[in-house]
Length: 330
Ligand code: P6P
Image (cartoon, rainbow, N blue to C red; front, side, top):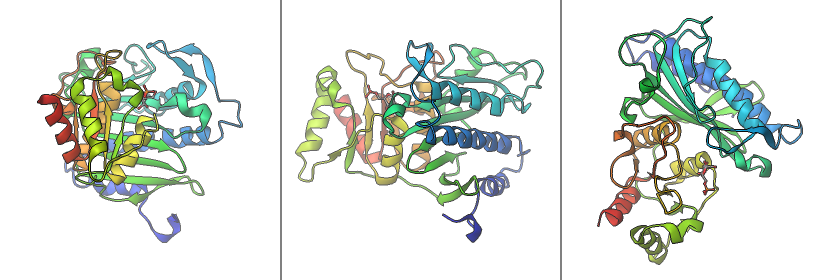
C-alpha cells in the first residue's frame, strides 16, 4: 500500500466521517486518533519483541490471576497514556486492571469512556502468533465528572464506536462508529494507517467454524450436534482456530464463518469478556451484516453486571449464527 498514491489515511477518513455528524466537535475524532497512535507504538514493540527482550512473562499477574506478559503491561500502559491527558475521558476500563482507571486529577475530565483489552491473545506472543487490541467507546450517562463503575455497565447497543487492531503479517486497524466498518493497514514506511478495506461486509454464510474442540466433551449435546452436523454437510465446513480472538474474528470477517466460545462445564459463563471483547466485536460484526449471540440473545442487548463479566460468545456470518441459535434453542 503506498500512501503517495493518495490513498485515504485514517486521519483523513475520520475527519471526513466527522462531517456526517453535525453535532461533532472533533473530540471523538481525537480519541480515535490517539487509539491509533497507541496501536502504532504497540505494533512497533510487538514486531521487535523477539529482539528487545520484551518477550515472556512479566513478574506480575492480572486480576484474573493470569500471568501478565511484558507486552500486556506495555500495551496497557500505552493505551492509558494515549488517552488519559486528553481532557475528553472520564474513565477507562481494561482487562489488565481490576477496577476502573480514573483520569488523574491533573487532567480535565470529559464525557467519554473507553474500554479495552490492550493485548488479547498475549499467550501467543512467544510463539509469534497474531495478537490484537480491542476497544470500545461510550458516552457517560447522567452528570459530567469522574466516572464510576456503573457508568461502564451500559448495554452494548450504547457503544458509539468499537474496533480492533490485529498485529500480524501487517498491522490493521478496523473500526466502526455505526456507519459501516472500515479497515486500515499500517504503512510502516510512513507510520500511517491507510484505508485498505473500505466498507467491510461479512459474507452471509461462511465455510469456516472456529472453536476450541478440546472443549467438545464439556459442551451441551445441542452444541456438540451443531459442530458434528457442520462436518457432515455435503460440503463440510473447515475448522480454523488460531486461539487468538482478534485473529480468528478478523479472518472470519473477511472470509465468512462462525467463531464459537460457548459456555461449558469448565466455563459455565463462557470464557470471553463481555465489556471489552464481545461488545466491541459484536458492534463491528452487526455493522458488517453479521450477528453475535450468547446463544439466547444478541450480545449487544445484554446489560453488564460487572466490568469483567464473562459471556458465551458466538459471532460471525448471519446465517451461521442463526443456525447455531436454532440448534441450542431446540
Ligand atoms: P482457549 C486468548 O487467551 C483468549 O482470550 C482469546 O484471544 C482466544 O479466543 C481464547 O482466549 C482462546 O481460549 O481456551 O481456546 O485457549
